[in-house]
Length: 545
Image (cartoon, one colour):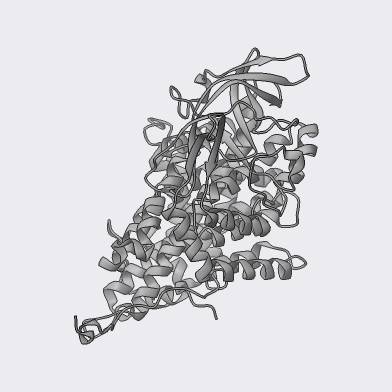
C-alpha cells in the first residue's frame, strides 16, 4: 500500500509524562486545605513523586500489562501436591511494590496519614485500579486488629510496612505483608449473619479450626485474612494466616478465581476452609462489631477509588477535546462539547472534595468527626460510586470511536466503574445503613447537619436544598422505600456545601444551579448556558501550572 495513504493528522497525543497530582487542582487544593503546615511540604513532595510516576509511560504500560495478563490459579504443583497459589504478571508486582513503597498501606500512625494516603490512592490507582484491592484490605485491617493488642503488636508493623515482598512464607520472615478479607458466602452475600462457616475452639487461647467456604475472598494471594465464622458464642472474627509459623501451608483451598466484568488484574476467589487454623480477633459473638471498622475504611476507599476513575476519565476526555479538531475548530471550543466536559468536571470535583473531606475526618478523630463519618461514609459510598459509571461512559463517548477501542484505556475504566458500588455493600445496603444511623445515633445526624450548615447563607439554592432535606428527614412515613432518594439528596447537599466553601465560584455556582437548583437535564451536557463553563473545563484540564 502506498505510504501516502498513511498520513496521520488530527490524532491526539497520548496523555503521558505528566504529574497526575499537580495536574488535579481539586485534589492538590484539598491536600493544602486538610494537612497542617508542618507536614505539608513532605506530603507535597511524596505526592508529587507519586503523581509523576502515575503519569509516566512506564506505569501506564504496567497497568495495561497487568490487565492483558490476568492472574492464573495454580492449585497443584507438577507432582500433585496442593499449593493453591495465584500467579501474577510481573507488572502487577511492580505496581504493588511502588504503591507499598509510597505508603498506601500506612495511614493510621503518621501525621495526616489518612489524607496523605487517600490522595496517594486517588493518584496511583489512576495508573491501574485492580491492585487497589489488596492495598485497601491491608490498610483497613489495622483497626480491626487493634481490638486485640497482642495481634496488633505482631501484625501492624508488617501491614504498614513500606516494603513489598511477594511469595508465600511465614509472616515473621517478611518485612511487609498484605491482607485480604473473607466475609460473604454462597447463601448469604451481604447477610453475613447467615454465614455457615464453623469455628471450633482449640486448647490454645484464642485458637480455632475453621470449616466452611467463602464465596468471595478478596486478594487470595495475601499473607493473611480476616474472616467471619460461627463460633460457639456466635458470629466471630478470625485472623487466618496463609503460612503457619513453622513454614507449613495453612488449609486454604482456592477452588477457582472469579471471571469478573472488570478488575481483571486482581484475583477474587472462592475458598474452602477445612480444619484451617485461625486466631480469634475480638470477642466471640462480636464479629461484625470487630470487623465493622475495616468495612468502613474499605467503603471510604470505594469512594476514593471511584473519584480516581472519574478523574482519569474526565482528564482523558478534556485532553482529547483539547487536541482534536472537528467542524473547523477544536472540540474544546465547541459550546456543546464544553457543556459536556464542564458537567463531567463538576461530578469529578465534587467526588474528590467529598472523598478528601472524609479522609480528613479520620485524621481529626474527634467524637464529632466520628459521628459525622457514621452517616457521611455510607451516604458518599452510595452516591459517588453510583455516579462513576455514567461519568466514565460519557467521557468515553467524548473520544468517539477512539474511546471504544482497548488501546485508549477507556474500556478498562468503564469495566471497572461499577465495581465500587457493589463491593463492601451495594446501594441498598448503604442506604439502609444511613437509615440505621439516623434512627439509632441522633448525634450522627447532628454532626452531619452541622457540617452542611457551615455553608448556609452562601448560596440560596444550597439553603433551599438544606430546607428540603430537613423536611424529608422529618417525614418518617415510607422511609425505607424512600431511602435511596433521601440518601442521594443528603450526598448532594453535602457535596454542594463543600464546594460552596472551598471551590472556585464558577464550580460551586454550576453545581448548585444544576444538582441542587434543578436547572439540569437527564444527561450530561445540559448545564445552563449562562454559566462560566469555560473556566470549569480549564480548571479540570490535566496540565500542571
